[in-house]
Structures are given as structure tokens and as C-alpha cells.
Image (cartoon, helix red, strand yellow):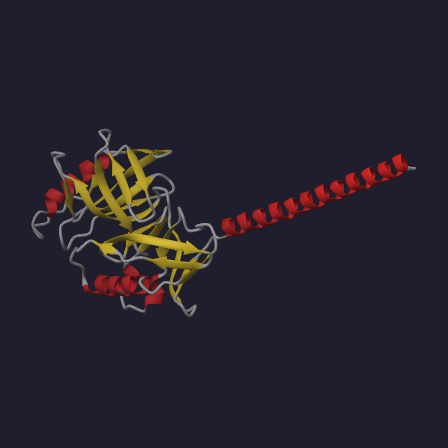
Length: 276
């Protein structure tokens, strides 16, 4: 009897130990589930803006004549940059869920026209008030702390195709990069059919181009033959720009700026998107 009683008691202890082990395992499962949920929450709060590039819907600014200006913005690894209408800007940003904070922005100090200045003032002022955002495949909307819309953007082109305004080019002797002459507009339109046309500041030009990945070739340009006496330097700009364009063999589009390079890796031409 004593032996049987001892065996029954031992079996009971083993059973309790097994139950305890099962309960501990179940608690471990709950802990694992909670960890997974937290991880999922972190993923849902990840930086969805990272790597995106946008062009501004200028109509929302209500600035007369602003349809000729095309501000841009790009987000990458906590850094924000773009063109505010004339000058370029850069700074930092942080994202937490649907909340967005843009830090103090630094910008270049180039003199701008009246319309460009008005657009730039409005854009930079509104970027400083951003507290949240919503994003779809077709639009980015930046909002203030009350949820009111500040700025609305559309996806920026990332290839070579499109209409562009030059901001600088490699000079004729390849010794330096120079800005576009004030009161002139140098443009390039890369068509989907491989055609290339634009203005070199005085005359218009046309030709063709090909693309393979980020590699490119540009044909010899055909240009009108008008002589322009003003502004000073416009004809030197024309020959220098066309030579730089035709020497380009590679391009990079970061959403705010299109940059062309020659075979030596030098920047040949920089562009910003052309409004309209």
C-alpha cells in the first residue's frame, strides 16, 4: 500500500510539472505574438516617403503667372531636397506614421524674378508648417497640424524624357561649370520618339538622342542662324551649351534635377523640369 501510494503521488507531481511546462510554453507563444505585432507596427510606421520624388501642383499656391514655374521635392534617407521655384533647398525630415516634420531648410541665394520669388516664398513658408502627409501612387499631399492641405505634388519623372530648363553647363574649354546668362532661357525637350529640340538662348536647335539604361548619345545639332547681340555672352553660351550637350554620354535624374555627364565623368549640363 505504501509503495502504491508513493507511485500515485509521483505520477501527480509529474503531471503538474507537464501542465506547468505547457502553460509556460503558451506564455512564450503570447510573448512571441506580441513581439510580431510590435514589429508589424514598426513596419507600418516605416518611412514610406524614402526614395520618392515629386513635382508641385502649382495651382494650389494661387500665385498669378506661376504656371511657368515647377517646384520639386525629393525624400531620401532622412534628407529632403528640391527646387522651390528658383533656388534649390535641402534639409532633414522625420516620419512617424502619418506624421511628417521637415527641419529647417537651407537654400541657394540666386536672384529670381517676381513670380519665381513669390512662388518660392509660398513654398518654403508652407514646408515649414508641415505636420502630416497622405500619399498615393498619384499624389503626395502635405498637411498642417489641423489637417488642412498645404501643398499637393504629383510623381516626378525619373527618366530623360520630358521638357527641361538648363541651369548651367560645362564651358567650352571644360575648365569650369557656368550658370545660364541672366534673361535667357536654355531648354531641352527629349521626346519619346528619340527627338531632341530646344532653345540655346538665342537660336533654336534640333537633333536626336538614344538611351540605354542611364547611358545616352546625342546627335549633332541643327540650329537656326540668328545673331543675338544681347544680353552679353549669349552667343558664347549657345556654342558652349551645344558642345556640352553633344558630349554627354550619361544622365542622372534625382527627381529635382536632371544632370548630364561626359565620358570623363564631368557634369556637362544641369536642368530642372520645365513647367507646362
